[in-house]
Image (cartoon, rainbow, N blue to C red):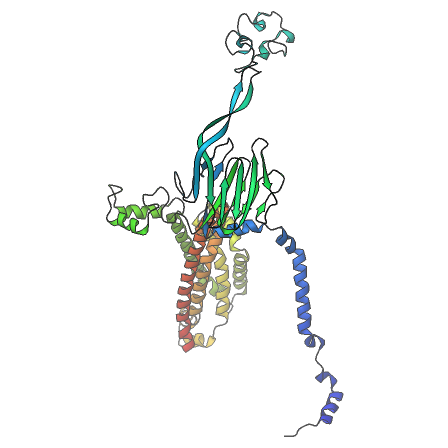
Length: 527
């Protein structure tokens, strides 16, 4: 083997410079790609105003929504508008009726309460403004009834008429005054937000404590203002002088202090009343107490066993609606299965007519292929909106949307697979004198059937996820239930529950689909 010297290489390079010089794009491909990517990123950042979106985003609300996925809030309202303290809860509180949580303590004592009264010291005699017959314009002695004129000045509707100046009940000169009285009531209340945070409430002052820092707020009920004593810490916000103060205590919750009440949001980790709602006889009991009552306790309902009552309470839980959620999830699975099955049944025979090597008719081939393109070019979500208007909300609209979209997709995939088969097997079957139907049955179907089934299984698993999306627009299934929970803007723990159920179903069907497809592919690989 002859080795070229350096001079010979230089000589060849001088005679053939183009062979030793790379093109410009090839030499600078990577730097150019990096510059183009950077410019595109800058353009996209500007076009979509990503910086403004990030800066104007309310991250506190976003964080609260994420926290609601794994926790719940109890929201007591501590009112002190009249001077005494009253603690109230929302109608559907997770603590049930008559709640008495251990993290709220109260102290009773003498409180000065402001009540409204009527000052009658300067009122006129009752005969001039009463509501009786004597003072009525319908009375025979009334000026309005005795006047004979018909003009406006003599009418009881006249501004100068005695009848028009009559009061309907209380005298016009009566004034509403505020008087005070002393009585026994709740003088102080303390709400423990966490081990290091609390809210101490009196009618005239609120003390907010977070960690080792305490913020005092003066309440002026007469002027309806809230005034901080000193500077506000970083965890408290007041938008304007005298307005409400919002104190944030991290994941544990927050408190809104107004001149007449304190709204407390106390957060707890977990899902409240997941198995039994507050109306259930099993609510608030430990696991051992529930099992004892279910299997050996005195009958709650004479017509049913305690175990049946327990199961009914779980399924018909008013807060979590387990039974309805499970039915909607089953609807989603059925929608995906039936829609995919019908699409396969229609696309399978049509794909033979669309394949050029199976049906040598160009007109039929093009018509069917354009039909497949039309079906799959319209997104499944658009079909779902169309069929929801046509059939109304429900699973039928979802099944139809999946059926239409997948018919076009399967038709295209199957016809292309048929056009790429090995003709030797078909020719071998034809050479023994088989009929055209037998040629397709024994020469074509064995080649494409594993591929067809594998693709159908994959789309079935994919449609299980897609059925959730189209359900949100009214096509039935758990997607509609998920959308209803999101619209309330308060049931984010229910959203998390349904998302977990969807993930479990997708995981199970993904593994089933992979197992079946691997069994179909392995025989082909061995052959």
